[in-house]
Image 1 (tube, rainbow, N blue to C red):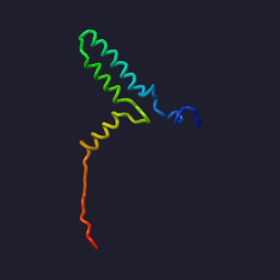
Image 2 (cartoon, rainbow, N blue to C red; image 1 turned 180 degrees about the vertical axis):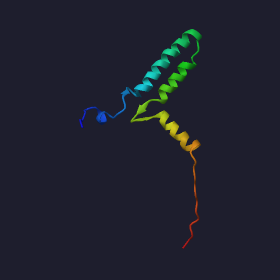
Image 3 (cartoon, one colour; image 1 turned 60 degrees about the horizontal axis):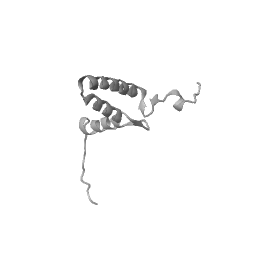
Image 4 (cartoon, rainbow, N blue to C red; image 1 turned 180 degrees about the horizontal axis):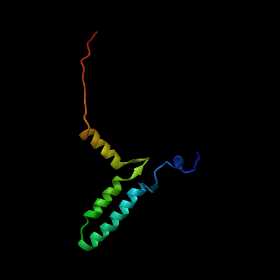
Length: 91
């Protein structure tokens, strides 16, 4: 097996600045479409949505804010939580 100098032996995700390349392409497409909508319809909602997505998809140490929010929603709202209390007998 060859060993490459690239981080994690060519198994790391491709990043461009603080985003994955897939997220960065989506942000660029969103900006282009948002500018077209702004010029034609004078609506700023698509720019706000693109900015929110760009903020939520920032990656630092392989963790994004969006991943953290999805995991928190899954833990608190979707998955079943079970708590058991037992009375300990005193000796």
